[in-house]
Length: 316
Length: 295
Image (cartoon, rainbow over all chains, first blue to last red; front, side, top):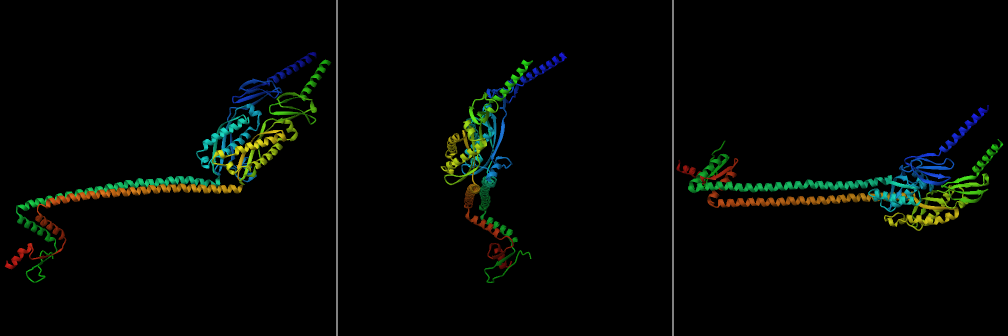
């Protein structure tokens, strides 16, 4: 009986020891590769930056460890100035109150919709945990604030086209400055402007400008191609004209040479026997020409009879 | 056995006392200890503290971290009577826990009160500015930052006195025009774009016209040039040919006339023409003679 009691006591003792050990072991904790830990004893920070690995802290309620993801890049989409009307989005809430579609105003008083994509990481776990409640909200507010301020000094054309990079850079710098001054414990690693566009109702007019630019280029290039077509054509015509003139010149000269050569030869012969040659040439001519003549009238001048006709060499 | 039992009771009492009188303050909070509603001390340092056990003293935990909220959109008039809808974010924290505890009960009420205060400050401050100070193509004339700084400075004072809180940042969260103004802005934007589009088209047409005129001019020039050159060439040909003719025909004018007249007649008398000749002509000289002589 006494044995049973003592063995029961022993068992209870073992259980007690096991419980104490378990309690002490509950202080073992691990910090992941992407995390940092903040260890506190009775609420007071004892180690603000526990590195990844296995660590020991005194068990509850003495020590407490808060873990923060520091190396993981977080993303938020700031659509406060867009016309994204999903329920619970910022534009939806704004429209509920004011009946307006949210937007941003440019320096030259144009209305622009804009969406901002932000990437950030926790840079200071202590600030992140203990200085600000709702760090992401604050980040949103600050980005919106910086967006309004930077767009308020710019022209709409700049915002819509080449100004995006500079805006992103100022946004990043300005917002970071503000976050630091408020001890937010966040660092912005990347700012990207997306969906920067004029409101839907005037989008058409903006598209018209783009089309007009294209048309301008088209009109000019049409004139240019007409030029490229007409100039060679004119040159070809010019060449043809001069070639023709050249040919004319050559023909004239050659013809003159030929004709005169013939004349000179005839002249040579003629000079030998002037009358005979002249006559021969004449009769030759007559012989040649008369068969082609339809009618020949011969008039005798000595008689007064007019109209005496002799028809010769008539086919009929 | 009895001693053991006593020890157990003492341990239980000590643990109980510890449980009811020890408390921690962490880095996220202030603690104001009150005795039946009356504050006795304020704890601003994190750590382990004692108090009178149980209901004798109460621990009031007060948020130490800064928090941020948005004001309700409000329509205000600028100094030049331009209406503007404006929303701000306000970042504040409790700087005097005791005053805070005594003045208000929840941070939501504070939000509302501070929001109203900032909005009324906005109303009076914006009267000193015009729309050109809000938006301007010259960034150095945009005074939003200055407005924010003024509101922060003025609200800071009031807030500390009234609620034991400190406003650490005020910023414009959203700017908008009332519906009717927005509509007119849209119309103006459309008109501006139309003008720009037309300008581009006109520019294109002008440039094209220039190119076309230049082209036409050059084409005409090329043709005229060619005309001139070909006339010169033809003239040269004519001249040279004439020289050749003159040189050759000049050798015997009579024979030239004879052969040329034959040639001319050959051309003229082609194709069934009718010829009237006198009997005196060369060809009939002998024919006539025969008639007269009766041969």
